[in-house]
Image 1 (spheres, one colour):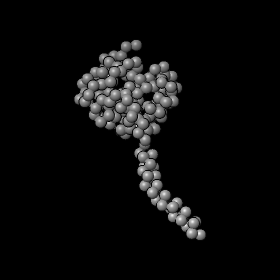
Image 2: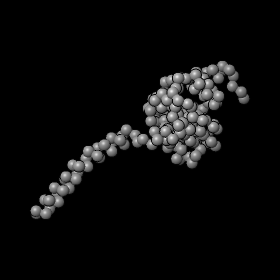
Image 3: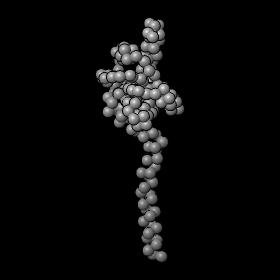
Image 4: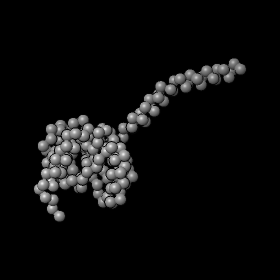
Length: 162
């Protein structure tokens, strides 16, 4: 069933708002994705305050052509959706996790990050950045390491003298 012109204008307005207001937008190729997997994907992304939207590529291209994003848009083949949110890393990280779980049914194609288009490889690198909580843990471990080594050495010296 064809989409009416009014519905297309509504979708374009929504996509324009997404592109303009979101800190990061991930272009997602989904191929042979089952409805239950798509529902699970949406639920898990929603927990991270990430939205997932599917629309026609022609509408995506129209919105991206009218935007002032630096660089050139990545090539979008197949069925395309967008994941977007206020957190800069959460959309990429969420899609990356499902990319691993669903064996290629969901793939990152590229995205918009920091007001510029990013390629698939750049978005994959962004997706692999650990969460803030994990980074804090790594930082505490780095700070704790010299103190821990000093305590071990002091304990060994005390054992030798005793």
